[in-house]
Amino acid sequence: MEELPAVTGSTVSSSSLSILANYPLISAFLAFAIAQCIKVFTTWYKEKRWDLKRLVGSGGMPSSHSATVTALALAIGLQEGFGGSLFAAALILACVVMYDATGVRLHAGRQAEVLNQIVYELPAEHPLAEIRPLRELLGHTPPQVVAGGLLGITTAIIVHLVAGFRIKA
Image (cartoon, rainbow, N blue to C red; front, side):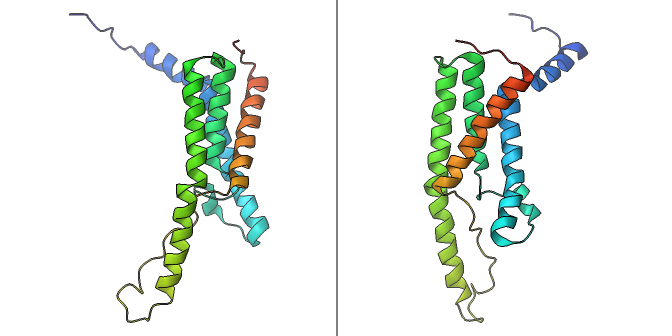
């Protein structure tokens, strides 16, 4: 039976620090954070009101899901090479997430709008008249997904250039 090495304080601290130098992780988190912040401003522009709930909400312009997975895939490609299986997996994940955002989640949000309208029109004495409205902003339109993807690409490239990570062929 093999002995496992003891975990020391220096091992834990060095692995904790190495996560701070993880280029794909930094790119993905930064793209997500930027997208969520932009949503506050796009909501203000469109609806003329500040809504800080957009910092943590799904849906809206740009797609933070698309920004996150696109930044992750490109950062992996730049760091590990575009011919490897890790990049292939990240690219497929990005495609699935972006397809889902404009497909199932978008249509679920539209169905929630219809259901909320039906409940709103029920008589006050109806047992369902008092239920909380369903969340309507779930998915993304294609322009929101494209904007998120472009934000992810831009973020990964800027982090790459600023941090000086090397590109593998």
